[in-house]
Amino acid sequence: MDLERLDPFTWRVPVGTVEGMRVPGIVYGSEAIVRAAVDDRAFLQVAAVATLPGIVRASYAMPDVHWGYGFAIGGVAAFDPDEGVVSPGGVGFDIACGVRLLRSDLAWSKDVAARVGELARSLGREIPRGTGTGGRLPVAGRDLDRVLREGVRYPLARGIGLEGDEERCEDRGVAPDALPEAVSERARSRGARQLGSLGSGNHFLEVQVVDRVLDARAAAAFGLAEDQVCVMIHSGSRGLGHQVCTDHVAAMDRLAPSLGIRVPDRQLACAPLGHEAAERYLGAMHAAANFARANRHVLADGARRAFEEVFRRSAQALGLTLVYDVSHNLAKLEEHEVDGRRRRVCVHRKGATRAFGPGHPDLPEPYRAIGQPVLVPGSMGTASWVLVALPTAADRSFGSTCHGAGRAMSRTQAKRRQRGADLARDLEARGIALAPANLGLLSEEAPYAYKDVDEVVRACEGAGLSRPVARLRPVAVVKG
DNA sequence: ATGTCC
Image (cartoon, rainbow, N blue to C red; front, side):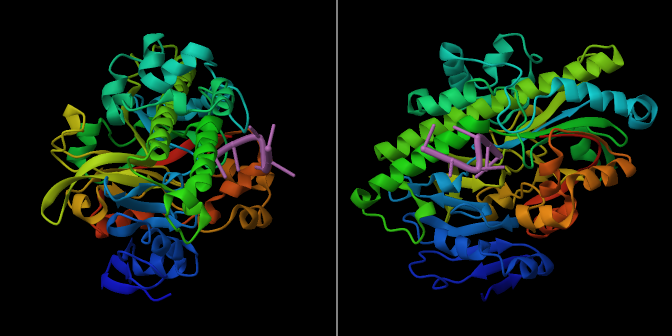
Protein backbone atom coordinates (compact mmCIF):
# COMPACT_ATOMS: atom_id res chain seq x y z
CA MET A 1 0.00 0.00 0.00
CA ASP A 2 1.19 3.55 -0.79
CA LEU A 3 1.23 5.94 2.11
CA GLU A 4 2.01 9.61 1.51
CA ARG A 5 4.45 11.16 3.95
CA LEU A 6 3.10 14.53 5.16
CA ASP A 7 5.81 15.16 7.78
CA PRO A 8 8.29 12.92 9.67
CA PHE A 9 5.51 11.56 11.91
CA THR A 10 2.36 11.90 9.78
CA TRP A 11 1.29 9.65 6.87
CA ARG A 12 -1.79 9.76 4.66
CA VAL A 13 -3.79 6.85 3.31
CA PRO A 14 -5.27 8.60 0.26
CA VAL A 15 -8.95 8.58 -0.63
CA GLY A 16 -9.41 5.83 -3.20
CA THR A 17 -7.18 3.31 -1.44
CA VAL A 18 -10.38 1.33 -0.94
CA GLU A 19 -13.63 2.07 -2.74
CA GLY A 20 -16.01 4.53 -1.12
CA MET A 21 -13.61 6.37 1.20
CA ARG A 22 -15.21 9.67 2.24
CA VAL A 23 -12.12 11.07 3.98
CA PRO A 24 -8.42 10.12 4.00
CA GLY A 25 -6.72 7.96 6.60
CA ILE A 26 -4.10 9.61 8.79
CA VAL A 27 -1.44 7.42 10.42
CA TYR A 28 0.90 8.81 13.09
CA GLY A 29 4.27 7.15 13.55
CA SER A 30 7.97 7.25 12.80
CA GLU A 31 9.15 5.93 9.43
CA ALA A 32 10.42 2.76 11.13
CA ILE A 33 7.06 2.12 12.80
CA VAL A 34 5.04 2.74 9.65
CA ARG A 35 7.33 0.62 7.44
CA ALA A 36 7.21 -2.27 9.91
CA ALA A 37 3.40 -2.17 9.96
CA VAL A 38 2.78 -1.69 6.25
CA ASP A 39 2.18 -5.38 5.54
CA ASP A 40 -0.28 -5.56 8.40
CA ARG A 41 -3.93 -5.39 7.38
CA ALA A 42 -4.33 -2.49 9.84
CA PHE A 43 -3.92 0.26 7.22
CA LEU A 44 -6.60 -1.36 5.06
CA GLN A 45 -8.86 -1.28 8.11
CA VAL A 46 -8.07 2.43 8.60
CA ALA A 47 -9.12 2.96 4.98
CA ALA A 48 -12.31 0.86 5.38
CA VAL A 49 -13.40 2.94 8.41
CA ALA A 50 -13.11 6.03 6.18
CA THR A 51 -16.06 4.70 4.12
CA LEU A 52 -18.53 4.89 7.03
CA PRO A 53 -21.28 7.54 6.78
CA GLY A 54 -20.74 10.84 8.59
CA ILE A 55 -17.06 10.33 9.40
CA VAL A 56 -15.48 13.69 10.22
CA ARG A 57 -12.07 14.87 8.94
CA ALA A 58 -10.18 11.56 8.74
CA SER A 59 -9.86 7.97 9.94
CA TYR A 60 -6.89 8.06 12.33
CA ALA A 61 -4.31 5.52 13.51
CA MET A 62 -2.03 6.00 16.53
CA PRO A 63 1.63 4.80 16.41
CA ASP A 64 0.74 1.52 18.20
CA VAL A 65 -1.82 0.57 15.53
CA HIS A 66 -2.31 -3.09 14.62
CA TRP A 67 -4.99 -5.29 13.08
CA GLY A 68 -8.20 -5.80 15.08
CA TYR A 69 -11.84 -6.86 14.77
CA GLY A 70 -13.30 -4.51 12.12
CA PHE A 71 -11.56 -1.33 13.22
CA ALA A 72 -7.80 -1.43 13.77
CA ILE A 73 -6.60 -1.34 17.37
CA GLY A 74 -5.06 2.09 17.78
CA GLY A 75 -7.83 3.63 15.67
CA VAL A 76 -9.71 6.89 16.25
CA ALA A 77 -12.78 7.96 14.26
CA ALA A 78 -15.30 10.75 14.94
CA PHE A 79 -18.81 10.85 13.51
CA ASP A 80 -21.34 13.61 12.97
CA PRO A 81 -24.34 13.21 15.32
CA ASP A 82 -26.86 13.78 12.49
CA GLU A 83 -25.29 11.94 9.57
CA GLY A 84 -22.88 9.57 11.30
CA VAL A 85 -22.93 6.15 12.93
CA VAL A 86 -21.78 4.31 16.01
CA SER A 87 -20.05 0.96 15.59
CA PRO A 88 -19.34 -1.55 18.38
CA GLY A 89 -16.27 -2.65 16.41
CA GLY A 90 -14.91 0.88 16.84
CA VAL A 91 -14.86 0.38 20.59
CA GLY A 92 -13.83 -3.25 20.76
CA PHE A 93 -14.88 -6.31 22.71
CA ASP A 94 -13.30 -5.17 25.94
CA ILE A 95 -15.46 -2.10 26.49
CA ALA A 96 -13.70 0.58 28.60
CA CYS A 97 -10.59 -1.50 28.97
CA GLY A 98 -8.17 0.90 30.60
CA VAL A 99 -5.51 1.68 33.13
CA ARG A 100 -5.50 2.83 36.74
CA LEU A 101 -2.27 4.05 38.32
CA LEU A 102 -1.68 4.32 42.07
CA ARG A 103 1.36 6.10 43.48
CA SER A 104 2.78 5.59 46.97
CA ASP A 105 5.13 7.18 49.50
CA LEU A 106 7.31 4.05 49.37
CA ALA A 107 10.83 4.18 47.92
CA TRP A 108 11.97 1.15 45.94
CA SER A 109 15.55 0.97 47.21
CA LYS A 110 14.83 1.75 50.86
CA ASP A 111 11.37 0.25 51.53
CA VAL A 112 10.39 -2.36 48.95
CA ALA A 113 13.33 -4.02 47.14
CA ALA A 114 14.06 -6.46 49.97
CA ARG A 115 10.39 -7.50 50.27
CA VAL A 116 9.21 -7.65 46.68
CA GLY A 117 8.81 -11.45 46.69
CA GLU A 118 6.56 -11.27 49.72
CA LEU A 119 4.61 -8.43 48.08
CA ALA A 120 4.14 -10.43 44.85
CA ARG A 121 2.80 -13.42 46.84
CA SER A 122 0.42 -11.19 48.78
CA LEU A 123 -0.85 -9.60 45.56
CA GLY A 124 -1.21 -13.10 44.13
CA ARG A 125 -3.59 -13.95 46.99
CA GLU A 126 -5.62 -10.73 46.71
CA ILE A 127 -5.99 -10.45 42.91
CA PRO A 128 -8.30 -12.99 41.19
CA ARG A 129 -7.10 -13.55 37.62
CA GLY A 130 -7.40 -15.76 34.55
CA THR A 131 -10.28 -16.41 32.15
CA GLY A 132 -13.67 -17.03 33.66
CA THR A 133 -12.65 -16.50 37.28
CA GLY A 134 -14.92 -14.84 39.83
CA GLY A 135 -13.96 -11.52 41.36
CA ARG A 136 -13.45 -9.94 44.79
CA LEU A 137 -16.96 -8.44 44.90
CA PRO A 138 -19.56 -10.68 43.21
CA VAL A 139 -22.81 -8.77 42.73
CA ALA A 140 -26.26 -9.70 41.46
CA GLY A 141 -29.68 -8.21 40.81
CA ARG A 142 -30.14 -4.66 42.05
CA ASP A 143 -26.50 -4.40 43.14
CA LEU A 144 -25.34 -5.15 39.60
CA ASP A 145 -27.75 -2.50 38.33
CA ARG A 146 -26.12 -0.04 40.70
CA VAL A 147 -22.66 -0.94 39.37
CA LEU A 148 -23.90 -0.41 35.81
CA ARG A 149 -25.33 3.01 36.71
CA GLU A 150 -22.89 4.25 39.34
CA GLY A 151 -19.43 2.99 38.32
CA VAL A 152 -16.86 3.60 41.07
CA ARG A 153 -19.48 5.26 43.28
CA TYR A 154 -20.98 1.83 44.00
CA PRO A 155 -17.90 0.28 45.66
CA LEU A 156 -17.15 3.64 47.32
CA ALA A 157 -20.65 3.60 48.85
CA ARG A 158 -19.83 0.16 50.25
CA GLY A 159 -16.69 1.52 51.91
CA ILE A 160 -14.28 0.12 49.29
CA GLY A 161 -11.51 2.53 48.29
CA LEU A 162 -10.57 5.95 49.62
CA GLU A 163 -12.70 9.08 49.57
CA GLY A 164 -11.51 11.26 46.71
CA ASP A 165 -10.56 8.32 44.44
CA GLU A 166 -13.35 9.31 42.05
CA GLU A 167 -11.86 12.81 41.55
CA ARG A 168 -8.90 11.24 39.75
CA CYS A 169 -10.98 9.13 37.35
CA GLU A 170 -12.05 9.98 33.80
CA ASP A 171 -15.68 11.19 34.08
CA ARG A 172 -15.25 11.05 37.87
CA GLY A 173 -15.61 7.28 37.58
CA VAL A 174 -19.16 7.21 36.26
CA ALA A 175 -20.76 7.62 32.84
CA PRO A 176 -24.14 9.31 33.31
CA ASP A 177 -25.77 7.92 30.15
CA ALA A 178 -25.72 4.24 31.08
CA LEU A 179 -28.77 2.19 30.09
CA PRO A 180 -28.66 -1.01 32.18
CA GLU A 181 -31.85 -2.29 30.49
CA ALA A 182 -29.87 -2.55 27.22
CA VAL A 183 -27.48 -5.06 28.88
CA SER A 184 -28.72 -8.59 28.16
CA GLU A 185 -29.37 -11.22 30.80
CA ARG A 186 -26.47 -13.24 29.46
CA ALA A 187 -24.10 -10.27 29.77
CA ARG A 188 -25.31 -9.73 33.34
CA SER A 189 -24.85 -13.34 34.34
CA ARG A 190 -21.31 -13.35 32.92
CA GLY A 191 -20.40 -10.09 34.67
CA ALA A 192 -22.13 -10.43 38.00
CA ARG A 193 -19.59 -12.81 39.49
CA GLN A 194 -16.51 -11.23 37.86
CA LEU A 195 -16.45 -7.77 39.49
CA GLY A 196 -12.97 -7.27 40.91
CA SER A 197 -11.07 -9.71 38.70
CA LEU A 198 -8.15 -9.03 36.37
CA GLY A 199 -8.92 -11.26 33.39
CA SER A 200 -6.31 -12.62 31.03
CA GLY A 201 -4.41 -11.74 27.86
CA ASN A 202 -2.54 -8.45 28.11
CA HIS A 203 -4.26 -7.49 31.36
CA PHE A 204 -1.98 -7.17 34.36
CA LEU A 205 -1.38 -5.69 37.76
CA GLU A 206 2.21 -4.59 38.23
CA VAL A 207 4.29 -3.09 40.97
CA GLN A 208 6.45 -0.56 39.15
CA VAL A 209 9.28 1.82 40.02
CA VAL A 210 9.63 5.30 38.55
CA ASP A 211 13.04 4.91 36.91
CA ARG A 212 13.14 8.19 35.00
CA VAL A 213 11.34 11.52 35.20
CA LEU A 214 11.35 13.48 31.92
CA ASP A 215 9.03 16.33 32.85
CA ALA A 216 9.58 17.46 36.45
CA ARG A 217 6.67 19.89 36.59
CA ALA A 218 4.08 17.42 35.28
CA ALA A 219 5.53 14.59 37.41
CA ALA A 220 5.20 16.76 40.53
CA ALA A 221 1.59 17.59 39.64
CA PHE A 222 0.84 13.86 39.18
CA GLY A 223 2.59 13.03 42.51
CA LEU A 224 5.45 11.09 40.87
CA ALA A 225 9.20 11.10 41.65
CA GLU A 226 12.20 8.89 40.83
CA ASP A 227 12.64 5.63 42.81
CA GLN A 228 8.99 5.80 43.88
CA VAL A 229 6.89 2.61 43.96
CA CYS A 230 3.61 2.61 41.98
CA VAL A 231 0.89 0.09 41.11
CA MET A 232 -0.47 -0.09 37.56
CA ILE A 233 -3.70 -1.98 36.83
CA HIS A 234 -4.65 -2.82 33.23
CA SER A 235 -8.08 -4.43 33.01
CA GLY A 236 -11.54 -3.98 31.53
CA SER A 237 -15.18 -5.04 31.60
CA ARG A 238 -14.51 -8.81 31.54
CA GLY A 239 -17.20 -11.14 30.19
CA LEU A 240 -19.90 -8.49 30.61
CA GLY A 241 -18.41 -6.02 28.13
CA HIS A 242 -17.55 -8.85 25.74
CA GLN A 243 -21.16 -10.03 25.74
CA VAL A 244 -22.50 -6.46 25.28
CA CYS A 245 -20.32 -6.09 22.18
CA THR A 246 -21.37 -9.51 20.84
CA ASP A 247 -25.09 -8.78 21.40
CA HIS A 248 -25.10 -5.36 19.75
CA VAL A 249 -22.92 -6.34 16.77
CA ALA A 250 -25.46 -9.10 16.11
CA ALA A 251 -28.41 -6.70 16.51
CA MET A 252 -26.91 -4.16 14.10
CA ASP A 253 -25.94 -6.89 11.65
CA ARG A 254 -29.57 -8.09 11.59
CA LEU A 255 -30.78 -4.52 11.06
CA ALA A 256 -28.23 -3.76 8.33
CA PRO A 257 -30.55 -4.41 5.34
CA SER A 258 -33.23 -2.07 6.74
CA LEU A 259 -30.73 0.66 7.70
CA GLY A 260 -29.51 1.05 4.14
CA ILE A 261 -25.86 1.21 5.20
CA ARG A 262 -23.45 -0.84 3.12
CA VAL A 263 -20.16 -1.59 4.86
CA PRO A 264 -17.10 -3.14 3.16
CA ASP A 265 -16.65 -5.56 6.07
CA ARG A 266 -19.37 -7.17 8.18
CA GLN A 267 -17.26 -6.47 11.27
CA LEU A 268 -17.91 -2.77 10.70
CA ALA A 269 -21.60 -3.27 11.62
CA CYS A 270 -22.99 0.09 12.73
CA ALA A 271 -26.20 2.05 13.21
CA PRO A 272 -27.03 5.72 12.59
CA LEU A 273 -26.61 7.93 15.68
CA GLY A 274 -30.09 8.70 16.99
CA HIS A 275 -31.49 5.35 15.78
CA GLU A 276 -32.80 3.17 18.59
CA ALA A 277 -30.18 0.47 17.91
CA ALA A 278 -27.36 3.05 18.20
CA GLU A 279 -28.75 4.58 21.40
CA ARG A 280 -29.24 1.16 22.98
CA TYR A 281 -25.65 0.18 22.14
CA LEU A 282 -24.28 3.45 23.55
CA GLY A 283 -26.35 2.99 26.74
CA ALA A 284 -25.17 -0.61 27.16
CA MET A 285 -21.59 0.45 26.35
CA HIS A 286 -21.67 3.14 29.06
CA ALA A 287 -23.11 0.58 31.52
CA ALA A 288 -20.23 -1.78 30.66
CA ALA A 289 -17.83 1.17 31.06
CA ASN A 290 -19.16 1.74 34.56
CA PHE A 291 -18.59 -1.96 35.27
CA ALA A 292 -15.00 -1.69 33.99
CA ARG A 293 -14.30 1.35 36.18
CA ALA A 294 -15.79 -0.32 39.25
CA ASN A 295 -13.74 -3.41 38.38
CA ARG A 296 -10.43 -1.50 38.37
CA HIS A 297 -11.53 0.22 41.58
CA VAL A 298 -12.13 -3.09 43.37
CA LEU A 299 -8.83 -4.47 42.02
CA ALA A 300 -7.06 -1.38 43.41
CA ASP A 301 -8.58 -2.19 46.78
CA GLY A 302 -7.04 -5.68 46.52
CA ALA A 303 -3.65 -4.10 45.80
CA ARG A 304 -4.01 -1.75 48.75
CA ARG A 305 -4.82 -4.72 51.03
CA ALA A 306 -1.72 -6.57 49.85
CA PHE A 307 0.49 -3.55 50.61
CA GLU A 308 -1.18 -3.15 54.03
CA GLU A 309 -0.51 -6.82 54.78
CA VAL A 310 3.19 -6.59 53.89
CA PHE A 311 4.02 -3.13 55.24
CA ARG A 312 1.70 -3.19 58.28
CA ARG A 313 0.38 0.32 57.66
CA SER A 314 -2.89 1.59 56.20
CA ALA A 315 -3.12 2.38 52.48
CA GLN A 316 -3.68 6.00 53.45
CA ALA A 317 -0.52 6.04 55.58
CA LEU A 318 1.41 4.47 52.68
CA GLY A 319 0.19 7.29 50.42
CA LEU A 320 -1.38 4.75 48.02
CA THR A 321 -3.54 7.28 46.17
CA LEU A 322 -4.76 7.47 42.59
CA VAL A 323 -2.81 9.25 39.88
CA TYR A 324 -5.55 8.62 37.31
CA ASP A 325 -7.91 6.06 35.78
CA VAL A 326 -8.56 6.27 32.03
CA SER A 327 -10.07 4.00 29.37
CA HIS A 328 -8.68 3.29 25.92
CA ASN A 329 -11.73 1.51 24.41
CA LEU A 330 -14.73 3.83 24.34
CA ALA A 331 -17.02 5.93 22.15
CA LYS A 332 -18.04 9.31 23.55
CA LEU A 333 -19.99 12.35 22.50
CA GLU A 334 -17.52 15.23 22.80
CA GLU A 335 -17.21 18.81 21.66
CA HIS A 336 -14.38 19.49 19.22
CA GLU A 337 -13.37 22.29 16.89
CA VAL A 338 -13.73 21.22 13.26
CA ASP A 339 -12.94 23.71 10.46
CA GLY A 340 -13.04 26.61 12.91
CA ARG A 341 -16.41 25.66 14.41
CA ARG A 342 -17.23 23.95 17.73
CA ARG A 343 -19.37 20.90 17.14
CA ARG A 344 -20.40 17.72 18.90
CA VAL A 345 -19.03 14.49 17.47
CA CYS A 346 -19.09 10.85 18.55
CA VAL A 347 -15.41 9.93 18.99
CA HIS A 348 -14.58 6.22 18.80
CA ARG A 349 -11.29 5.31 20.46
CA LYS A 350 -10.27 1.67 20.14
CA GLY A 351 -6.87 1.06 21.68
CA ALA A 352 -6.38 4.81 21.84
CA THR A 353 -6.28 6.92 25.00
CA ARG A 354 -8.19 10.15 25.38
CA ALA A 355 -5.65 13.00 25.58
CA PHE A 356 -7.14 16.35 26.60
CA GLY A 357 -4.61 19.17 26.80
CA PRO A 358 -4.10 21.89 29.42
CA GLY A 359 -7.18 23.89 30.39
CA HIS A 360 -9.79 21.31 29.39
CA PRO A 361 -12.81 21.61 31.72
CA ASP A 362 -13.22 17.80 32.00
CA LEU A 363 -9.86 17.39 33.78
CA PRO A 364 -9.52 17.07 37.57
CA GLU A 365 -8.71 20.47 39.04
CA PRO A 366 -5.14 19.56 40.16
CA TYR A 367 -4.25 18.56 36.58
CA ARG A 368 -6.08 21.27 34.66
CA ALA A 369 -3.08 23.55 34.17
CA ILE A 370 -0.82 20.64 33.14
CA GLY A 371 -3.03 18.49 30.92
CA GLN A 372 -4.53 15.01 31.20
CA PRO A 373 -2.33 12.16 32.41
CA VAL A 374 -2.08 9.41 29.77
CA LEU A 375 -1.35 5.95 31.18
CA VAL A 376 0.46 3.62 28.77
CA PRO A 377 0.89 -0.01 29.82
CA GLY A 378 3.93 -1.64 28.26
CA SER A 379 4.22 -5.29 27.39
CA MET A 380 5.13 -7.80 30.09
CA GLY A 381 8.58 -7.23 31.52
CA THR A 382 9.09 -3.91 29.69
CA ALA A 383 8.54 -0.31 30.71
CA SER A 384 5.21 1.46 31.08
CA TRP A 385 4.81 5.21 30.66
CA VAL A 386 3.00 8.18 32.10
CA LEU A 387 2.52 10.83 29.42
CA VAL A 388 0.72 14.15 29.38
CA ALA A 389 -1.63 15.25 26.60
CA LEU A 390 -0.30 17.97 24.29
CA PRO A 391 -2.57 20.86 23.27
CA THR A 392 -2.03 19.95 19.59
CA ALA A 393 -3.73 16.54 20.08
CA ALA A 394 -7.11 18.31 19.95
CA ASP A 395 -6.63 19.14 16.25
CA ARG A 396 -4.49 16.17 15.26
CA SER A 397 -6.47 13.25 16.68
CA PHE A 398 -9.66 14.55 18.34
CA GLY A 399 -7.66 14.58 21.58
CA SER A 400 -6.20 11.04 21.46
CA THR A 401 -2.88 9.26 21.70
CA CYS A 402 -1.46 5.72 21.95
CA HIS A 403 -2.63 3.10 24.46
CA GLY A 404 0.33 0.73 24.70
CA ALA A 405 3.10 -0.91 22.77
CA GLY A 406 0.82 -2.51 20.18
CA ARG A 407 1.13 -6.08 19.03
CA ALA A 408 3.78 -6.93 16.44
CA MET A 409 3.13 -10.70 16.35
CA SER A 410 -0.03 -12.83 16.55
CA ARG A 411 -0.75 -14.83 19.68
CA THR A 412 -0.14 -18.09 17.81
CA GLN A 413 3.21 -16.88 16.46
CA ALA A 414 4.24 -15.70 19.93
CA LYS A 415 3.35 -19.07 21.52
CA ARG A 416 5.43 -20.96 18.97
CA ARG A 417 8.56 -18.97 19.75
CA GLN A 418 8.90 -19.65 23.47
CA ARG A 419 7.18 -21.74 26.16
CA GLY A 420 5.54 -19.92 29.05
CA ALA A 421 7.68 -21.67 31.65
CA ASP A 422 10.91 -20.57 29.91
CA LEU A 423 9.65 -17.01 29.62
CA ALA A 424 8.78 -16.99 33.34
CA ARG A 425 12.33 -18.13 34.14
CA ASP A 426 13.78 -15.33 31.97
CA LEU A 427 11.70 -12.69 33.72
CA GLU A 428 12.60 -13.97 37.18
CA ALA A 429 16.26 -13.99 36.17
CA ARG A 430 15.89 -10.30 35.31
CA GLY A 431 14.70 -9.64 38.87
CA ILE A 432 10.97 -9.42 38.09
CA ALA A 433 8.80 -11.24 40.65
CA LEU A 434 6.01 -13.10 38.86
CA ALA A 435 2.55 -14.31 39.89
CA PRO A 436 1.04 -15.85 36.71
CA ALA A 437 -2.25 -17.72 36.65
CA ASN A 438 -1.53 -19.74 33.52
CA LEU A 439 1.92 -20.49 32.14
CA GLY A 440 0.41 -21.71 28.87
CA LEU A 441 -0.98 -18.26 28.05
CA LEU A 442 2.06 -16.38 29.31
CA SER A 443 4.14 -16.44 26.15
CA GLU A 444 1.29 -14.91 24.10
CA GLU A 445 2.19 -11.76 25.99
CA ALA A 446 5.97 -12.06 25.65
CA PRO A 447 7.83 -8.77 25.09
CA TYR A 448 9.03 -9.94 21.65
CA ALA A 449 5.39 -10.11 20.48
CA TYR A 450 5.03 -6.33 20.91
CA LYS A 451 6.49 -3.17 19.40
CA ASP A 452 9.05 -1.20 21.40
CA VAL A 453 6.88 0.92 23.71
CA ASP A 454 9.66 3.52 24.11
CA GLU A 455 9.65 4.08 20.34
CA VAL A 456 5.84 4.33 20.25
CA VAL A 457 5.99 6.98 23.00
CA ARG A 458 8.65 8.96 21.07
CA ALA A 459 6.47 8.84 17.95
CA CYS A 460 3.49 10.20 19.91
CA GLU A 461 5.62 13.15 20.97
CA GLY A 462 6.90 13.67 17.42
CA ALA A 463 3.32 13.65 16.16
CA GLY A 464 2.25 16.27 18.71
CA LEU A 465 -0.14 13.97 20.60
CA SER A 466 1.48 13.56 24.03
CA ARG A 467 4.76 14.18 25.87
CA PRO A 468 6.60 11.76 28.17
CA VAL A 469 6.46 12.50 31.91
CA ALA A 470 7.82 9.38 33.62
CA ARG A 471 9.05 5.91 32.70
CA LEU A 472 8.05 3.07 35.02
CA ARG A 473 9.79 -0.33 35.14
CA PRO A 474 8.09 -3.45 36.50
CA VAL A 475 9.40 -5.21 39.61
CA ALA A 476 6.44 -7.54 40.23
CA VAL A 477 3.95 -8.81 37.63
CA VAL A 478 0.54 -10.33 38.40
CA LYS A 479 -0.92 -11.90 35.22
CA GLY A 480 -4.06 -13.75 34.21
C1' DA B 1 -10.21 -9.16 24.78
C1' DT B 2 -13.31 -13.69 25.65
C1' DG B 3 -16.87 -19.52 30.02
C1' DT B 4 -11.04 -18.51 22.68
C1' DC B 5 -18.12 -22.58 19.64
C1' DC B 6 -24.87 -22.44 22.39
